[in-house]
Amino acid sequence: MRDEPTADAGQNVGSGSRDKLVQLMREMRVGMLTTFGPDGPRSVPMARQDVDPGAQLWFITARDTAHVRVLRAVPHVAVTFSSRDARVAATGRAFVIDDTDKVEQLWNSFAEAWLPGGPEDPNATLLRVDVEQAEYWDTPGSKVASLISFAKTKMTGATYDADHGNVEP
Image (cartoon, rainbow, N blue to C red; front, side, top):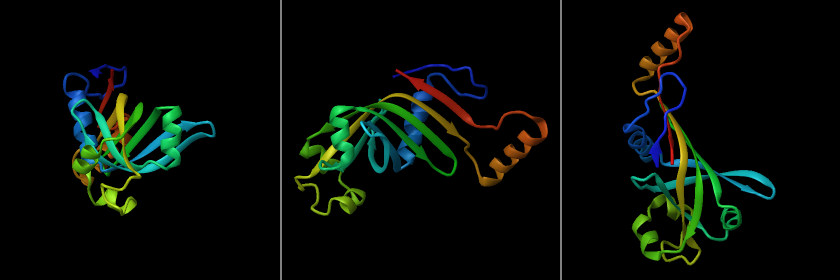
């Protein structure tokens, strides 16, 4: 991935944009994975297991799910994350990976909630999403700081103070 500037005001694009994106995604545990199958888009919540520095996302999932069936035919996905102070919207390609050592390495209580048979469950598999494009908005600080920024926007007509970046391959 390389950083790509956009025309939006208030963005923070440059060498730190990819690092910022990865940092934000590491802080957000659950995202919405959207697949694009023959019946149209479908979104499911997914507990993120890991984020590699190159913005690869790892999820443990059950291989007998509708989203895995769709991904085998149409690997293009969108993934969104949201927290109190930040948002991430990413698109990329998803791959179903059968790697029992990696499942074991990434296993945690989130995975166990869906696959009670543990990492040895034959239905457990991995999804790796290679992020191709992502955009983030971060409003770091307390709720008070966000309210002050919002009030400033209303009084001055300036845009809301958010760290915004667009990262593309």
